[in-house]
Image (cartoon, rainbow, N blue to C red):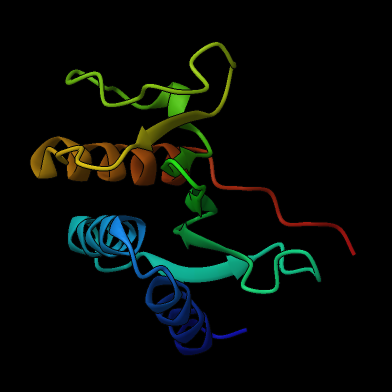
Length: 136
């Protein structure tokens, strides 16, 4: 799937969320794109129970995924444990050795500068140790 197809699928996902979750996901997506214009969008894990799949942002591997639940928008950073988080944005999946996540609830403010710094840190972590190519 090319980047334009993925972007269109993410557009559709955001449009289908007619409450605060759509607005939150759209804002986070814009910040991710602002943080590094070389980040590519993808949609992964499409299946009959989740035909829209999971919006994913990548550069030298997966940076983060954006999932929506009834009570939150969750961004999971694939290598979050390796990313400096001086503003303590990570508030979920804190005990793992690799991933970290941020759960956004309705009404939560996003510290745009700190969030973009996290995204740039995730890019740096991926560029330092790119994802291995799958054997096939």
